[in-house]
Amino acid sequence: TNVQNRTLSDWDGVWQSVYPLLQSGKLDPVFQKKADADKTKTFAEIKDYYRKGYVTDIEMIGIEDGIVEFHRHNETTSCKYDYDGYKILTYKSGKKGVR
Image 1 (spheres, rainbow, N blue to C red):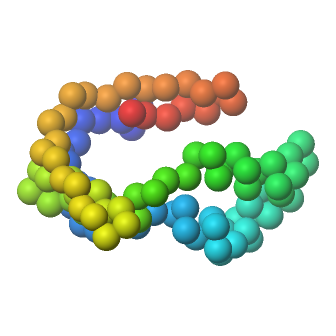
Image 2: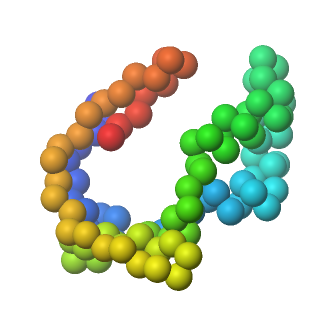
């Protein structure tokens, strides 16, 4: 397996939410490509699936020196991150994920 323990510093930087990109339609070409490849789901079904997964009011996340900052509506909340290992998940679709 490719899953391994990693330090938070591997993710240092500023991260933006993809949810605004979904809302604006900028991800529509990606969803259309998925719909074209998977004839069992429509464009709307695929977009709705990702909307449920991407929805958030967090606009940006900053990570530096073990501190995670969440930026929402001109407010910032921060916390210290303590690593507690990982868990491999198997979804209904059969695909795997890691938390």
